[in-house]
Image: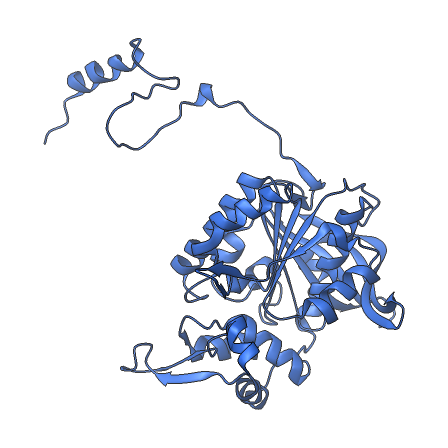
Length: 379
């Protein structure tokens, strides 16, 4: 069909008649909906932690093994639950926090760390799973995000949702841009609908000296692309050669993208007789994340065998086969040896087969299926 500008102008003129809806859109049959600019009222970004955590937005907290990423997230959560203050002294309005973890036990790890950080556990909720047809199933965002939004509404809303690790939100290949975008979109929509900040925890690789740390988040680049703010934890060397940890802001599409805060990890009494790890914030630091974390990029990371298990668990899921070469690449870039990778895969009972469909070239890995609550009770 040949484009006729006269006919186009005549059709466009109809948008100014009285039957048009605000913004120039008619009712009727299914169609793509367009919004005219003058119907959209400019609104400022709303911040939970000014410049760092925005309400209604997706964020990522990435770092090397051993930098205390989960503990850092719980320190921020603790501030929200009591209406305390964030690093740098910014006041935090009191609110509820929702925590989704596929790794740490809430009773012996998550809650003790929250309490050791001074949090109020009555304002803290953990996603246990989804009850379907009378059976408890693992929470699946692509399937359960509507149910989660309803649950959030029933408790009166939340200010912060933490996902540890972020890869559990992706039902598919975490190295596929399409799968990652499809997996994260429900969380982006949830953040906007509920007006909460969503913070996902991830690893970043050791390689890439001199590059932006946001580009070293393991898996698809879509993780960093979809997040409005990317925070990075790292262990670096101070001026006198001492080891210290830094939380830096390595990317922000909605505010400043530099600066950070030092912190140390220490043990504190959570409740009588139970100690847990907590964060103690130190001085503010200035500069871009690339410069602040330069020493950490060059420092061999590796880590213990438990660190290798933790990272492998983050890279794999139970419902999708992931290319073995991609998994090994990410772990080697984070300093783990082939032996550590093999040992970690054995401890996790990783399933392996030739080709993602059982045929073809290349090996693929995935985690064994998670047992249901009923399976666990039966033994």
